[in-house]
Image (cartoon, rainbow, N blue to C red; front, side, top):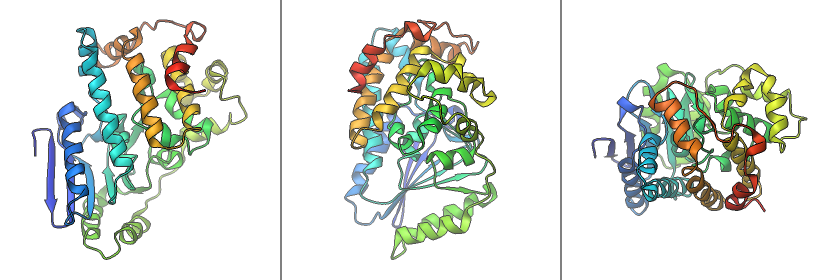
Length: 338
């Protein structure tokens, strides 16, 4: 147990609780290293049969990685510290995605960026109907990372790109449609579902017990609004970023496309298309790391984090300011789009 992370054993259940509620559980390097250590230890612990991820505090499960700290490292001329952060985070994502025991995510409220990188790769994913999911990296000059492209690659490409390129928060219905979660529950049932997950750790057939719990607790979620907006443009050429912004961007739900970093839009589109051709999560995460190293050193990352999270004026000065000025070849070279 650390100040930012609670690692708890309860009989056959291992619990990893993000405990930085004042920052909506934004992931620090300390938290990432703690999660990795716990998972590696429990993988060989015969008493631990199931691991649960949850987040402390009412505001949400996790608001993502601590990109303000990453920006500070880059601006101070210590880009290698940013590289180390991304390498540690993506290694953790890979461990979660390939874990030999059942991993369960029980999320609520804000589930963004690195939070999806934890919860999205779990084998069993519960969320509350009021949760809000987002990969907001296009708003800060970065890219859809933490292996989320591996998940989104299984969704229709127009839906996946609408979600990743706009970066707007979506509700549980869209999260289900995009494959980011498996079961939306009534928030009033949170404690009961958590108790059911804990009970499953002692079941003879853990996976069957968790599946039955999902079936029993699934709540109505309404319309997948963002996916519906993207569906209206399913016939568009979704390899053409300019067409996406100029045509699909006329939809009110997709209007944020015009405000995003042009470099990020190209990086996100190209990396998602590449992920659809990649063999496994390891390959996707390796591409994420190469791209993160490049983008964190470009002006848009420091400027985007400043505008959204530091000064909060929401007025980033992107460089370049247009899609025509983006060096697409340098992005393709690190993504490995082939």
